[in-house]
Structures are given as C-alpha cells and as structure tokens.
Image (cartoon, rainbow, N blue to C red; front, side, top):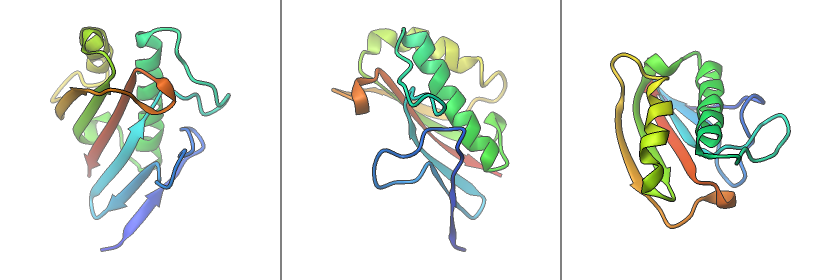
Length: 126
C-alpha cells in the first residue's frame, strides 16, 4: 500500500508542512481543521457556534474529496481552548453524527493555531 494525498480547494490550504488528509489503504487521516473559510481566507470567529460549523464544513469538504461522508468517520479528536464551550460544540457536532457516532476524545489545550477556540481532526474508513 502507498499513501495518497487528499487535497481540495473547498477546505483551507495547510498552513505548515502537512497535508489536509492522507489516505492509506481504506483509511483516511484528516489533519486538524480550524474555522478558516477557504474562500475568503478569513477566520470565522463570531462565536463558538460559527467556529464549529466552519470546522465541520472544512472536514466535510475533505471527506467528500476522499469519496466519503460523516458516516465513514471512525474517530475524531476535538481540541478546545475552553472546556466551558464543550456543551455548545458537542451540540453542533452531534448534528453531523445522528446515528452510530464515531469514537472521540475532547481535550482542553492552552492554545490553537491563529488563536482559534476549536480544532477537530478525524480518521475515516471505507
């Protein structure tokens, strides 16, 4: 097996030495996405709801490019700068996983790229 790079213009371009996602066999490893609008290049930071929705939109675009959707997601990791926002993020996140949600952990971190409040990474499989 060899790795295949997944890239779409419908999600933000990487801001460092990494790829949006890498496929290996039947698995796709999606790098953490922040609330960066791929069209404008601006951060979506009005509130945690808007941030989370933009992150999920970015993840959805990468999944689509890989020929998948949220039903293929096996595991996610949610990074928050404030665990007090967990309930709100969780409420929005749950809208994308209405049946058989993936495994997940949520952790609070001291900081995230560009000063955002939420970042989410995923592993999906066919």
